[in-house]
Length: 167
Image (cartoon, rainbow, N blue to C red):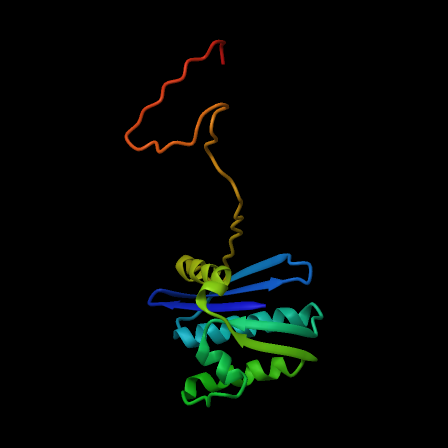
């Protein structure tokens, strides 16, 4: 599981991505219903992901986030000094204790792109509590090269094609 949180002055979001043993991706984005700090949003993402994993019966899990603070607090390398983060830390530990085998690790932001994008999308949308939206993301390319056409730099270039038959 990869997680990431995003907080802005007008909204906050969380992104969670589960990767199955067969390398299938299951992405989730959550608009957080209250404004919060970025560290709170990171904890929210972790907690939401853990709750989902436990609900579907996952017991062995690798967990990755790009927040050194949250990851190191969860694994016990950093002390939780900010009072407002203590309830989040405690809840995360409660959920982690429900798993049999876990690994929690830090990854660079570049290795956490999908969770980051989902968290930022959710923070940008800033949906109300009763709203939800499905956003499909597809792989497409809109313009294809014509048969026999070479891939050339088309900067400041106009091409005209004539059709031999009616379209």
